[in-house]
Image 1: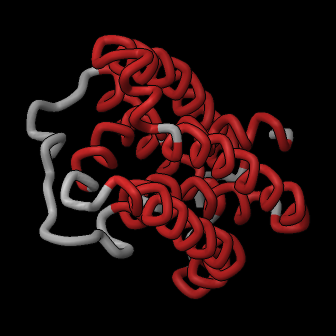
Image 2: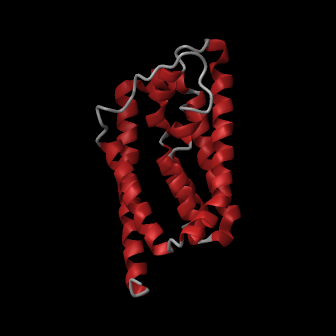
Length: 198
């Protein structure tokens, strides 16, 4: 996987367009003058967490004795489930979540930006080729920056694209992610077959 493809994968998993309505809903009780500062703060917190997980995650895998093949297959399954939710959104998704006061860390930084799926993808990239950590860090930074631009311009994009435009964009991203997830799953199976499924 190249740095560019890793950045695209992380961007798709972060799903900033899908998170945009959630951000706007969670910020309803925050004064408009502070909303940009709050979003910027939460984005920085999420980036620090993702970068930290990039370096500490492989040690956790080593401690648990999880093989690369198992992680690749599991990652493909997780990404596939995420992609299905993007293509066929659930009616149970909390799009109208409101908070009392200003949100801090939860739910904007975690889990909207640095959610389980994004953490798992970061862990997968690093565990497969740990020697390429500078490239994975660049990919993470690029994906985070692209998502940050979308979320910081949230209200403007929401007015520009409208609800139907946001849904169409998210479903298109979900279709791409389906193909990535299937390819990852097949890679894990080929690796497991080559190692004798020990």
